[in-house]
Image (cartoon, rainbow over all chains, first blue to last red):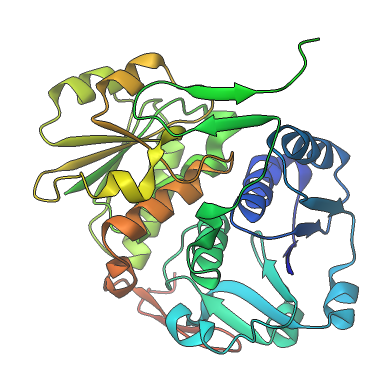
Length: 172
Length: 172
C-alpha cells in the first residue's frame, strides 16, 4: 500500500499545488494521502473527484506528521532535490512493505530528513513536488499506473481530436 | 528544440502552478517557455532560478498563443486528459523537428485541439499539467534529462542525509 504524506500545506498559498499532489497520488497508484493542515475544502474537492472518476483513494487532512512517521510500519521515502539519485535509491526500497512518501512544500523540517529511510531526489534541479511525485510513482510501479482501471461514473476515452466522455452521472 | 506554451495563466490563481510548469520545463529538458498572460514577476522568479542554477532556459510572458501556433515550424503536441494514449502517440512525433508542447490551465479553447498535430493524454484521469509535462518530457527524451548538466553557481550534490550544496554565489 502506498501512502503520501504532504507536509507544510498552507491553505491559501498551496491550495492548487496540494490539490495537484493529491490528484497525482491517486492517478499514479497511491491509495491515500495525509495532509498536515486541516483543510475541509480540499478534502471535499478530492472526494468529489473520487466519487465521479472512481477508485478507492482516501484523503485525510489535519494529521500530525511526526506521529505518522514514528508509528509507520514500512518504508519511509522523502522526496527532495537534496536527496540521493533516483536510479540508485529506488532499487533499495523493499516493495513488499507499506510505503510512505513524504512531500514537502517550501522548507522541510530537519526531522523529516532524519526519520526517512531514504531521501531521494528526482534530479537535483529545483522543479516541483508534483512532478517529483509523478516521476517517483511512475518508476516505482514501472509505468503500471497507466493501466489502472478506476471504473468511475465518468470515463474518458482516448481520442486524438475532441473529447470522448462516457458519463453515468445523473443529471440533477 | 523543445518549447512549452502555457495557456490560460491567471496571475493570482496560477502563480505557483505556472512556476512549477516553468521549472519542470527547464529541469526536464525544454529550452524555453511562452506564457500567454504578461507576468513580469513570474519572469523575474524563473530568471533568478536560471541565473543561480545555470543553463540557458528562456521565459517570455504576454505572448499570443494563436499566432505562435499558426507560425510554428515543427510539431505541436497538446497535453490533455482527453487525448490519445501516450505510448501510442509518442512514436508518431518526428524528433528531428522543433517541438511545441501546449499546456492548458483549466478549460482549453477548442482551437488548441484543432491546431495541435496530436492531443496526447498522460493517463485519462484528472491530475496535473505539471505532472503531465514531466512524464511527457521524461518519455520524449527517454530519461536523459536526469543527465543534463546546468553548470550553475549553485550545485547540489546527491546525498541520502542532509544537504550538500556547492555555491559559487557572492555573499552580498
